[in-house]
Image (cartoon, rainbow, N blue to C red; front, top):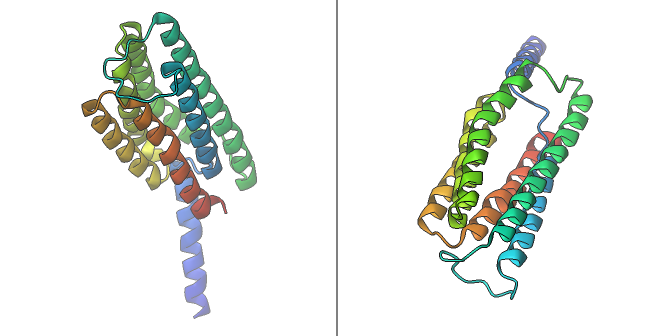
Length: 206
């Protein structure tokens, strides 16, 4: 019986080592929660810009001036930078706790797999904003973000793939219901991130 237990422990150790060699295990669930909170705060700021009178309505034909568009772009960039900074800081702490290197071959592949869809999506979103297609921005953000998560999921936990599928589904739905993009954006980047972060924290961090 003791030999069987030792054998199972050895297998678990080997499986853990192999997982660390191909997966980015330093991803923090708490970072997901904080990023979700930041996204909801960003959505509230965007709401005040788009609806200064405080009354929400279908914004499919909402006229957004160039000054508001610039502010929305800056808000989006600031949200992205803060979220990345939080993710980097929390991942650094977790990597140190696990005794692994944050920057290795796995994290390099992860960055590349994330950067291609996100970079392409970012350029596309800027083009939409530039031409005034504000109603299509949220669906595009969600779809490209979902594609990035699915593309990078091979180097992350399996839960990331399911989060990516949810973002894709939400983005496609938002593309057919133009005018409520801010609601979908808040759900996708805010609520889903918080739910995902809590689940990840309870499973891998707690």
